[in-house]
Image 1 (spheres, one colour):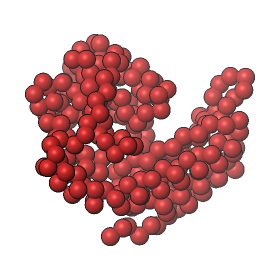
Image 2: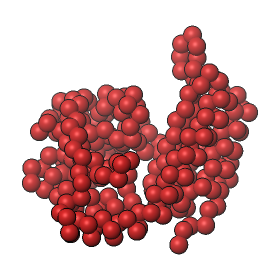
Image 3: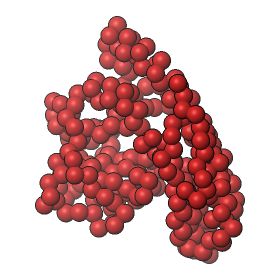
Image 4: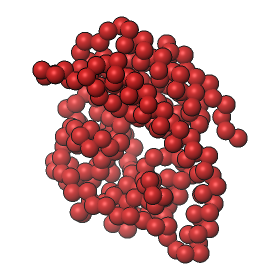
Length: 247
């Protein structure tokens, strides 16, 4: 049964400001995200909005929201000439993301049984493989992920030579290593936290099953055969994406 939607109180929406932002725009951002939270498919654990002014002669304004829906992060971002316009555009995009997430949640339970049955009859689910040749230290990887507007990025750390994943969290970024040894150099960016646990060692089929049953947007794992880093995620066309490195 679907969760009965209960909107957040505007005071529960965290606001982070970078640059000059008027108090009225802060209130508008809180109200916008709080009202949209009622569209979530499960209980909303929290929400954070970042309002920023990009440096430069045009001073472009951006608004970004991250809504934590029972551990699943729903993210939207918008930019405009004014903070008010950016918040308005952000609201439209966040509404779309929340509605898409709710529809996906309603359909996933029925699709999961069908996919498992189809997998037994026709072999492995359709996998679309993508090669990630990104070599970067964690701080550079986080910047590249932002530029690509992705929620995660699989990359090779040239310092350690290991496959790593950086992904968004409600308060910044998180770095996951295949082997998180304590002597490895930490990121220099304070917004990047480091996971203490190692990535699980799984087969592709087991990673896909974990993705479906757990309701995760992606799963980072060490390949059961090679030990190399892999990421499985859902694609818009219904297939599974498998991101690998050149290792």
